[in-house]
Image (tube, rainbow, N blue to C red; front, side, top):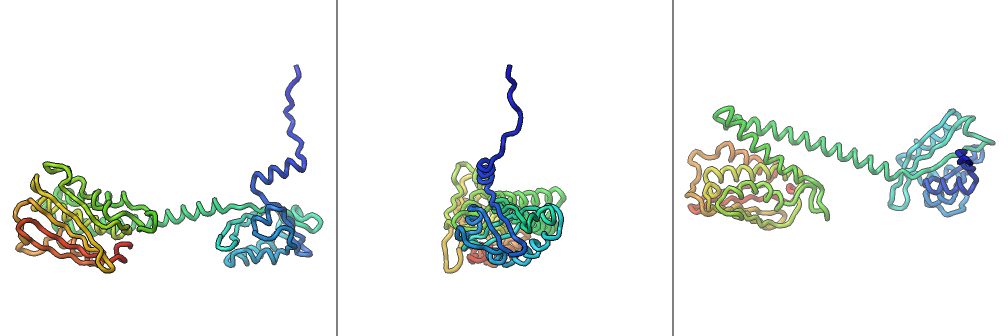
Length: 333
């Protein structure tokens, strides 16, 4: 029985060319005396230069991003004397597009044959852009975590002042942190430049959905606000405000009654938006005789200091009306 050959294939020029093309690799050679540089056809495409144009290292380096140009020139000059393999990653500018290229080869006596160095260029734009995206994501996550820790610390401080016991403090704090958690579940980039975090209507609907289930009928909470994106800071601030208003309504207002209803509407006004919180069908309400409690102070502080907006209350017998005004610039933050 004839055994199957396991010897490696014979690599002719055509096979090597096919392998190089499949890998997206461009071949180059550089005469270190004349400074002339030659590339295969793929190299001309990669660098966006006319095919067959006579090139020098200096002329080709004009395509390198200005921030990387001196570094690359120094690195290539150093390869003449340094033994061993090298790899240099740098950016090129092709029109409005920035590409990442990696130049690889051997330097010193190993890589210089008849005063000529050879090596490859390979487009690594995909990998570099992915790395940049990961770095951006890591920075964004770090920023968000720091913001959440700062908010949690402030909430802990203000909740401790308004609590009658450890159990009461734990319950209040958990509810407030849960509201923040729901808000941050929505935090993500939006299409069409609508905002960096969430849609205003989605934020209100998600935060209030637990209260809608407590009544005698579904749909007693209605949200009708402009379709607009809001930023991370605004999402956190509005989450606290909506949570505190809902908590007060559940204790004293329309949400404390099975048949009570809540309407949240919004309209664009000038360079901002006005959000109206309107309760119906609950017990008769009146303004607190002692002024703002800690929850109300948290709402006012959040609206004015964090969101740069304003809040006003209208204590009608039929139900509380709260008007919130925020400018577009603060909403997008």
